[in-house]
Length: 213
Image (tube, rainbow, N blue to C red):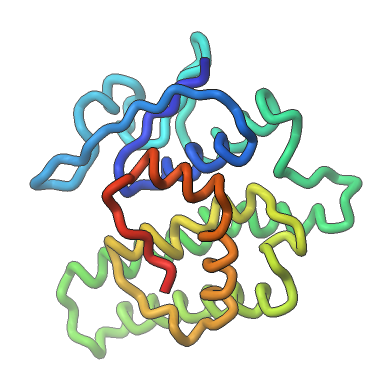
């Protein structure tokens, strides 16, 4: 059986959610962050040298990196569901938004988080530039959702599973007001209504209030 190693409040929630959407059986092993450093516990380092989540085990295979895991599960266990193939009219959109999450959205939240912790002056040029980049990224996302129910179009796909963490759980580490982005908030409401998402979050982070506003 597929085993998912999930670290609380982390990107590994994507993998739990994916398996719930695909109705794939799995064993969930939850790891807690160090109470002082908030970093991964030693058990994850025993699985993979980077010591980060997610990690999955599938027979003798040990695989890390959320995007790689999502593609692996879809292709090996999910019969291609939740991905759009080259013959689909929204194939290019799917590819773009699937990779947008780890190429732009999550990195810019991460950079802002680190600069925020550095206690820089509010007029620091690097800080302002990084904040401006986040506004651009969120504006692009908000514009995309103006006429599309989901990121690849009107169809829910793995591109959505890749992106929602940055807009919700990530804001526990770096708060950013989403109220100017009405389309994103409507999108998050649609996501929050999905039974598979609700089930995944109950299993993986049962005590964590979800951030949808």
